Length: 376
Image (cartoon, rainbow, N blue to C red; front, side):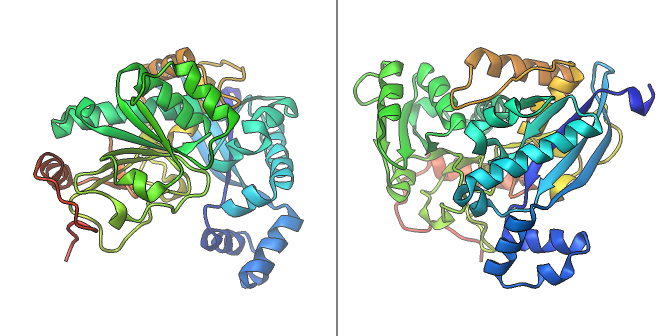
């Protein structure tokens, strides 16, 4: 199949830190700006509205034999700028989507905070000729599937544990809560504030008393349960020393919610729940965004899956995801061969001994000492 005739996707992302913003400016020949103090650097990027085509997937091959190609476009803003200047950030995401459509993309995915601004993708979809998705449905599917697989690997019955979900009122956390509540788990939800929307959401679940507890305190929440899903918009909110021994954290956020440490815990498992891998049929090796070979964000996996299916439709938009569509995109992605069990932690493979040490800590005597065991 000729390259020009392949179905195409675009993927819109942003810089994940000020450090990454500086490196991006250097890479694209804007070195004087890269050396500016942080405040001036951010103002420069905000006013200039820099968008660059940063990565090409020239041939993604499905296990079914279907092929697609795509490009990632980066908005040169740091994460906090997306939250502080949402109108401007939305304008730039729309521009990036329009650039992708002009290149030929028929499906456009929104990564990280690009999927939050603009009414969670709705405004971008309304202003772009191509189909748009946040990719959040496959992100939810991947996180729940990885949770199930890891619990089996650890030999743990999660129904005997409290599950903490951090990141309300985000669409990912809402959907995970619906799925896990329906399966009978005890849940602690962490929300910035108790809004009318959250109250209505809890009432819609029909939860019995004691099945769901709501708190605004992250520190107390992570010490009330050893299984944690976290997907905030801010990142860097969980110090590893806050975690109970045996904790298993499914970190879906970008930037990550769990703070990286040069002295990692031996007795906890931090899982990059937002990552999957390309189908084994894709023989070319892609190193996207510093990840392991052929690892990709699951929201990008949804974008690719819809492109392989040539389903040019708005799939995951807005605050409340459709559970049937979460299951559907998961099944389609698995049929195409996307891999959900190459488990990573801080973008690196998880050693077997980490699983065994976490299982031992989780099933052993309670250890409430702050910090747990650390690498020497």
